[in-house]
Length: 452
Ligand code: UDX
Image (cartoon, rainbow, N blue to C red; front, side, top):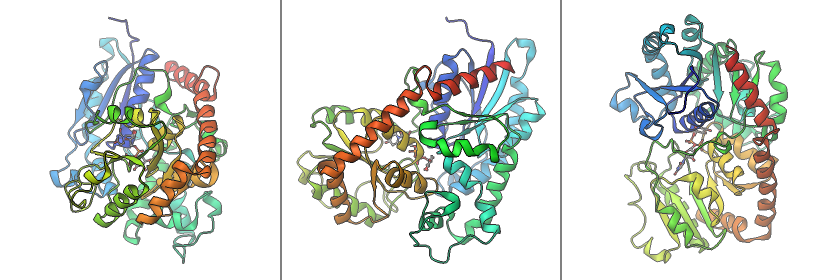
């Protein structure tokens, strides 16, 4: 057995798929640098410890009822978890911090969405790092929202306005209106964001799952908000560490042999991540739009993601048979392998930050269909700034989908977009290689943790 560093890092992810993946990937990176790893997690959306046999997993009782775990209201879930988990975390750390056993705990790394952890860490004299699992532009911008609302800048009178928001580039007013959600969400959301900013300012540093190549302007601007160091260590999954899954759902591995049978760059991959749900009529518009292209598609439909339905039972009778093998629907895919497959030529995505990064890292152009929160900003970067995808502008209509998929997959416009995403892919991948910007920031982070 390899002799491990006696220094241990404790990681405490927010229990959402989009936060668990980068946190566990960061754990693998730190493990590869010699740290021992403990993952503290909630019972809700607990990661599969058997996928990571070299880490220690400790589960906190989180007090969520069965109904609360099934709620679609993520803000409510996060509020309840923040209320319920402080004492369990305190008790867990008390048991862990036993210097007589010769294992020193270097620091706690958790998510900005945990608003009680700074005071807990302080009471144990434990340095706390915050993980930013969003694009950094969004991370900085969303913390401004309560102030914008206080100053009367929000809401905009016209929630469909196309003009840009100067203080939150490159968002358009209509995007920001959607990020802000409904009126009744404003108060709890703003209170949560204020608390995040307040507690985070006392942290020892911010680890950012992005790189200078994707976030240069906002990283340069960050010193106006934060006095602590920022570590943009790049997309975590392309660092050179052994692969293992952090999926909360079982990926359907039959996707890969199916893709093996398809022509190079002929398949459009469709997935809306782990949280988004669609109405039945939106689901049917997507289904018809895809089938009308006559192109091959691989579509992830999570059980329960079509509102009011179990899975895909609302598809018209004979829909799949009518595709003559050109379509495949699964409940969950091994996404990174799918994007890396030579047969995948495009990605119709909700633009969650992980999916956006994964697509860029494989040089796959996108069709943007954002639904909530940071997805609106990521989509604007994809379509308007990097120009590596086409924005659907929320038009979930079969003809628009058919036309957009065709433009991306087979028309000269798509070729140009593909060329640009490959250039960006190469820049981002170079950043994690020795001497690259992300690799240097990671070295600095490791030195800093070691110095405690
Ligand atoms: C959530 C928010 O929705 C998103 O806006 C925010 O940026 C992160 O948190 P989620 O909806 O899960 O994330 O999307 P995303 O960030 O793209 O993460 C999804 C992860 O699940 C990706 O790492 C992706 O590879 C993985 N995945 C998704 C699979 O492994 N298989 C699938 O079938 C679908």
